[in-house]
Each structure stands twice: as C-alpha cells, then as structure tokens.
Length: 372
Image (cartoon, rainbow, N blue to C red; front, side, top):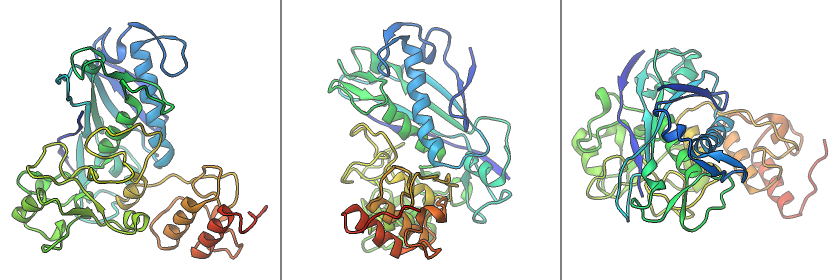
C-alpha cells in the first residue's frame, strides 16, 4: 500500500500512552504538568468529585472516543497522538482544535474501491492488520481557552451530559468533531489549487458534487474546475446514505474566499438543525448527527447494533421513524451492521420498507410492537 503524509482540519471559535475505548490507543505528547497532564486541582465537571484539570480533560476525551468506538467496527486499534497546547486566539475568536489522519493509501488488501485513497486508519480495518508503524491520527486542543484572555471569560466545560453553562464551551462536542476529521471526514485535495492529493482521488472528495450550471462531480473535474468549485457555494455531498436521510444532497461548506482547514471538509453552516461537522462550534452534541450516514458513504465498517427489542435497529430502546429510515437504508444497501432479527418486524425474513411502515405505525400507536 502506498502511504502519504497529510494535513489537518480545524474547528474554529514526556510521552505517555493510555488505552481508552478498546479500539483507540491514545499517546499523550504533553509535557509533565501541562495539557492532559495538568495537575491543577479542581472539581470534576463530570461527577462533581475532586480531580485534576488533566484528568477531567482525559476522562472527557475518553467518553467522546467511546461514541465513535460504539458506532464504527474498529477491529484494528487506532493510535491517536494528542496534545492540549496553547494555540492562541483573541477575546472574540480562536481555533478550538484541529485533527486529521497522518497518512492515506490506496489499493491495499481488502480495499473497497480501486485507485481510491482511504485514511490509514480506515485502510487498516479493511485490510485486517496494521499496515504502518506510526500513529494513524493526530489531534490538538487549545488550552488557552481555559484562560481569561482567549475568548474572554469563556472556558472549556469537560462534562459529558450536554448540559453546558452559557459561559462555557463543550469540550466533549469538539473532541467528537475533531475525531471525525481524524477518521476521514475531510477532503485530502489541495483546496486552494484543486489538485488531488498525490494525483489520486480520495473517498471523501469522491462524494462531492457542484450543483448549479456546472452540475459536475469532483471526480470528473480538472484541478482548475475543483479550484473554482471550492469557492462556489454550490458544493454538496452526493453519497447515497446521506441523500436517503436528508431526501436531498447535503450542502458542503464552500465559501469565497477559500478558508484553509474549513472549506470543503465540513457541512455547510446553513444546516438546520445544526450538525456536528460544521466548521464552527454551534452547540453541544451528545452523539453523531448526519455523520452516521456519511461514514456509511465513506465505506467505514459499521458496528453491528444489538438491540433490546425487535424493531429497535439503532439500539436506542425505542421504535420510531429513525428505525424506519435505517430499515429503508438496509433494504437499498445503504447501511450495514443491522441484524435481520432486529429489523424484521413483520416476520417475513426481510428488512425493508414494509418493516419501516410498521415502525412508524408503532411509534404513533397504530400497531402493537411484536413480542417475539
């Protein structure tokens, strides 16, 4: 497999390794006494018990890693190199963090598509083994936010319940966002020139399309056409799973002028309701949003959900329209990782739109849920 070094995507507004979620190995690059190793005493934002600033940060990070670990089928552990560093900013704006994959490759064993770049972390899942001798992902977060100069009196909140005071920023949501980039939610092309990375298309860019008069897929464009598209405000995600969920292609952030680290690697700011992978912090998130469908489009292996009742295909202990959407996606091959016995509400040994109709009827009390 060919591998290549990559740049990172950002979200605006002594070595130690620790195993967090079993699927991730986190290597902390902070020096003793700072960042994730900060020994400043504090009351935990998570459980209200005495702790240190570094421990609170690390526990919040671990909880966010678990969200991704629960959704993706990660069988080859991913190593994340991480720091909590002073990244600067002003009283009104700051880079909250940045992250990305360290390399990508194509034509590896088990590759879903030929001549297509995938991040190394994802490539390892398809190959079934670790193909390189270094960390798959890198991330850094802004410790200056915990001061009183950058963003004024606004500081990080390290809780994991989504209840965030008005004068704080939810670190949990920012970590979820940055992990998304590290796992592959970003374009690998040179956005300022439109050149494909190493001259090879990548799986994220392969799902981009310019609407309007141009009406053309990025994969079919020249470098100059992609360069123009990147500042057109007309870029959308055309992947089948996202389109099925939204009933239309989802807009991608492509402002003029081009914004390095943000353009064509985030959902557009017009998204309503807000989405996790927008270019700026909008609100606390406890879970993934449209990113679930995007990672299906990206060919990431999805973990099998083991529900507690028939019809609850997404494992949230309810039967509703979300399960119906998943059932339709399964029928058309847009979602994997769903057990037939959890989906087959009507007992005909299929998972399809009939089961989806049953799920909606159950949600509105028009049909009893089966007890088998």
